[in-house]
Image (cartoon, rainbow, N blue to C red; front, side):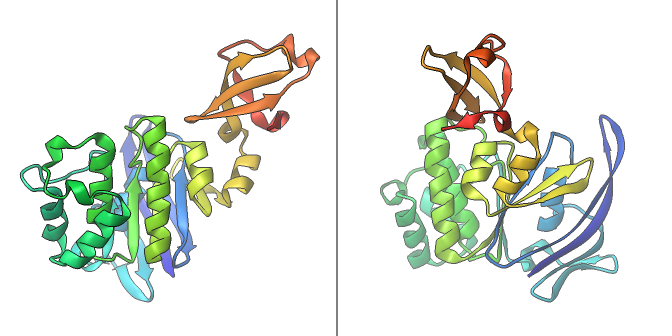
Length: 271
């Protein structure tokens, strides 16, 4: 069990805000942190990783990471962290990037095989595509078999097809190693597909906590999509995040629909 009870005063573009988060995360859960920009999502992730200081308490399986103003060193927390910008060592090969973390060649080869990177293990990062670099970053984060894997919008810079492929890769690795995973994401379809639980942050506070379906049905903003196309059979194509969804609409509704407008999917029949 990962117990979190922290607070930190943040100074953003909209003034002072208090990040105050209290929750428990079960071992092996896949938790998505959602919310508008500036709500404190990335700061929370950095606090969990030990990269920023906060007040309060945190413990993983009864081992305190933060207590009475004292924080456990980052290297002792047994975490993996995947950043948006990959953060790979450019002068090291794919294999060397992994072995730098943990000199376990057998495990490195296992991870590379799982992510279909074996043939690229002697390549430098500059020779890789964005999706390949992100897979290397994910493998490297898992090299120490972390108790906690933190993902800060790791797929935001990738195209839709690669995002879907890596979502499947992350889920496969998450299940294979039973790692507790916490991911920051703005993408509703990504959250629905990957997470078993969603925490919604608003102005530094958790305002919603539940399964993706429960949270999205309560929050109509998360069920909004851009109308791309209408056809004569009464079907509309809507873009939600990076996923296309078809909905059924009536003749009466058609008179009020315009290409490019935002639709609340909760009021339509999704197919």
